[in-house]
Figure 1 (cartoon, one colour):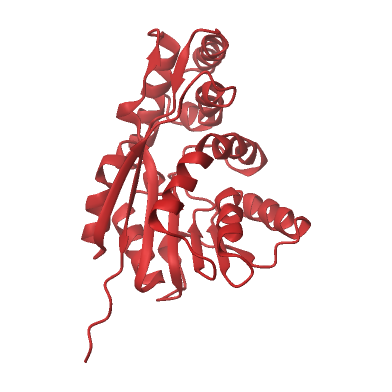
Figure 2 (tube, rainbow, N blue to C red):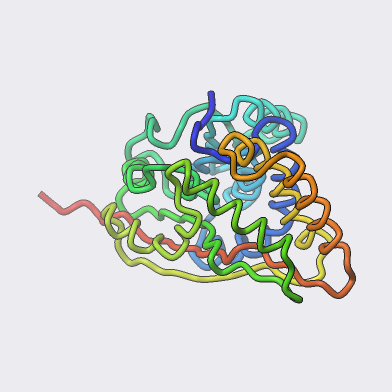
Length: 272
């Protein structure tokens, strides 16, 4: 199964990129979980879980008395995540191949979370409503996503600018919003979620994972860029090489897109 709007390469190649992305994002996501208060014993849903990196983090936080369900449309990533969870002896994690719009859950979770999911969906509003339905009254919904308009590098670089342009164009051509981060609080509010909070973060600097993530992502959107005729294969190869070279310069700075985190609660049921 696949999301036809998803512009980043899936399968094994996509899983390896997600490992790098997870290392870059882990401090920011852990801060979110601490801020919101993921607790021992919580039942959690990790929607659009990819290779299960966040799923495993949640599993450690909720402990043996809690549970985490990871769902994603990518069969290969789900299979890898299941194998890795079994090898690690995790008994409070399970995975399922299902899209967020088709979630078979209602009031089942104390915590629902989605990272880098809504920006890949033509109907993010429907996804937010699905997360709402899956969460029990009083439970927490958390989303993290990109605002590509906040990306930057130093010094200025044509390859980095080209990467941001191609990513933005490819996402928009598939009906998705690469700037959705700034809309997340409104999306949650429209879904019926209350007590909404928001935080902005942005990994940037000389880190050995942060800097190569931009050319690595450009490589992984190559299929979509070529299919949409946004660049020729030669142009794309040259841009990837130039971006890796720029990332390899000791004094260059490359940011990931601005990351917006938004969260809130499903209202308590009113007494009859």
